Length: 500
Image (cartoon, rainbow, N blue to C red; front, top):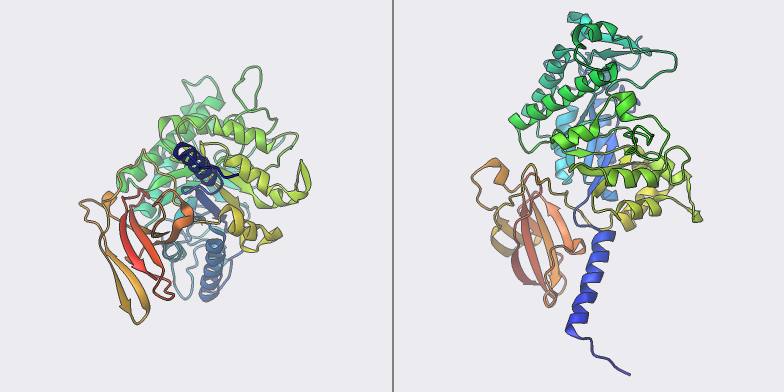
């Protein structure tokens, strides 16, 4: 027996399939990875060797479908870039203050290499830490030598005093320098605000509290305000220089535990951002001081103290209007079995859970090295399934939601290198309107053009041309080119019919 598919039913079926496709393979999604330096992986490498290593790492991340790299550039009030204010990092050359030989600028190199691969570059800084080990030698030009009164020693480490206006001014000066001189896409801070608590030890900031703590009900409120002021000032610093540069943080995975006095917390029993690290992340989000958060939810589904599923749900319901991505621990995901299918790890469950919430717009992998090394075939899984198709960044409407104009003069030309599709950049009056990337889609000639389908993206490029795969010249295709601005607002498409 044969049935005719009625138009309305056909449309509904198409809409259902499209929704399922968008949820499984979203067109817009943050797909980040953190590259750390404090583990010493680059220390004492020659310039050539480190450049080769970074290229290999970026190639592997690109292969996995990563579209944003968060690279550590200031771990100890030092620099993995050319700075007039802070010394070269010992995590680069082995000795703080020693410049690399032959001379190069790792941050500039990474920005260029990331942008070649159409990845965003997020400059990762630690605002307060000056020493990870109190015994390490500081360079002669380290800020500590001229202003030792700005610092506090605690837990065998050295920190800027979070209460001092002078330290906030210094941090903002560093960020201003980075944003002014480098084509970064974001400034990023991780979870180190006030140091993690140590049993039996109190952070020694009584002197600063007695001097600046009047008017606060508790030292906790005072500490939170100290960090709040820094976050607000960093936000203003970035906006005044380059309004398209984002500011994001990756806090500890628990904001507050649910208690009788705090019923809005998560159903967890772990360390807390608000009460232990004095980082009031939700307040920053409400005030619009940060553009994205990546809570480090480094536990597994079913964890007795901090369940991954409970925390993902809590953060998804408490975004406060801020873009939310989930911090994933690769090794934790691999070593824990799915509670309903012990023969597999938790990656499928975590990705399915993450993508089931409209307020979660991506994730970030910790550490990048495990993706690069393909530990447990994690990179293979991202490439084959979860990041199968390219993804644009989520739209940051609060920064800019005006797309560039359409590309112009699309034409195909035979060249010595092959059959090339060329186009001209759209006209723009201001920097925020400039096209900096292009998306190339390909459809069969009779196929409906649907620019929300990422499976039709054949390239995201900074070039104004694309080499088409030529076969026998008999197959009919429709190419559509769109333009992206710095925040990946997308223009309307410009189509060109070709035979390949």
